[in-house]
Amino acid sequence: MRVYRIERHKYLPEVLSGRGAALSEGNRWNSLHTPMVYCSESRSLALLEVLAHVDLYTELPTDRMLVEIEIPDGMTVQHLPTELLPDGWNTFPSGEGTQRIGDDFIRKSDHLLMQVPSSLVEGEYNFLINPLHPKAKEIRIISAVQIKPERWRK
Image 1: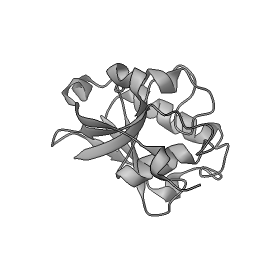
Image 2: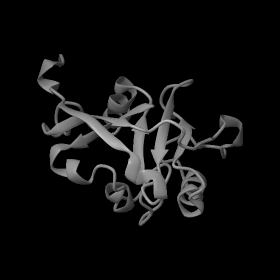
Image 3: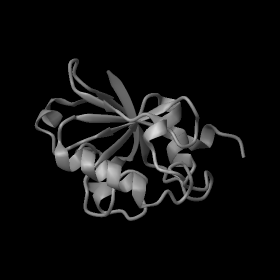
Image 4: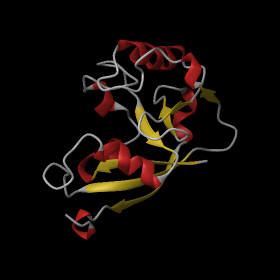
């Protein structure tokens, strides 16, 4: 399976560590100090998930890369149906309910991945990678291609 992530060039060496999410407050699926790697099922959803949080022309760093990640066949995926999500899971800010779900996913370490619905596009999904799972070492970076926002219209 392939998943996608947008990452700054300077952080590529640690893109699968989950360190960035662990250092950030206000994430949807993890609380502060909980490592997690946010990915999407498509390139376009990965980009949209980033663009929803920045001003496209003034805040998007020019060193953003589209990272293609390969998850080996047979890896365990926890599916999280929308009906099991707390009220307000897809609002901004999302609150602690979704963070507890994500923190439990990391702590229990039963699965390498958790599939979660996108809060932006109904019917599309993001994948959360547990970097602490024993099988996380088997994940590979396939490619990292620079995003060129200068091609986009203002």
